[in-house]
Amino acid sequence: MINRISFRRIRANRALTTALSVSALVLIAVVTFYPERASHAANHKRQQLSFEDRVEAQRAIEAVYWRRRVWHTDNPQPKPPLDEVLPDDTREMKWLEEHKHEYAGQWVALDGDRLIAASPIRAEISVPVKADGAKLPLITRIPAPDEPLPIGI
Image (cartoon, rainbow, N blue to C red):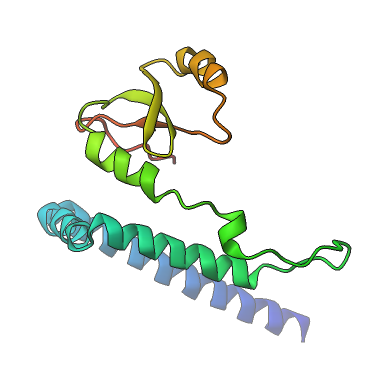
């Protein structure tokens, strides 16, 4: 009885491994032989949404995450509304969209739509940010247009 069960599991695992291998090979073949279709489809999807639509979609995703978050019973305060927890960063995102070509390849620090500091070196913007006294500035790096996407393997 034990031998039959183990052989069934081995056969099931082999079938699953074979199916996954075939799927991976098909995907590699499609990307290799039709790269223009894959990149065109990705660019087409990216071009369909405006900046405001993307911000609104991200906000909706965060709202779903917040509604599903379990609020521990040890916490005496009630769960605050999402607007208190997630600040409205639309101004920062709009500024980044408008000025991404001016500050390409640089680190920027923003307080709302106001630029606090910009530099290609991250450590150089720390002093102006502290001196400014902004409550919670956005510090981010704007990638250069010709810079490859950071993909980890």
